[in-house]
Length: 83
Image (cartoon, rainbow, N blue to C red):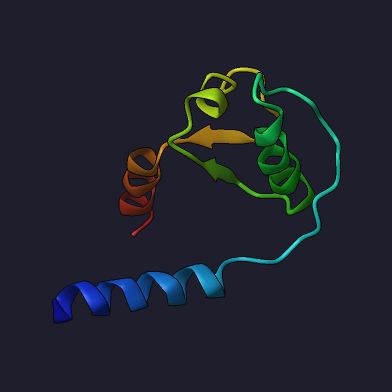
C-alpha cells in the first residue's frame, strides 16, 4: 500500500508541475458527444501536446482533431521513450 501511495504522490507532483489551468473556450465542435468538445477545446486553448483519453467518442476523432488524442497506454510508451 505504501508503494501505491508513493507512486500516486509522484504522479500528482508530475501533473502539477507540468500542467496549467485554462478556461474553456468554444473553438471546435467535433465530437458526436457534445460534452466531449470541452476537452478538445481546453487542450487547444492550453496548447496541449496530447489529449489523453479512454473515451471512444474522443478516440474516434484521432485523425481529424487538431490536438493529438491518445490513450493512457500510448502516453506511457511515449514517456518511456523520453527517459
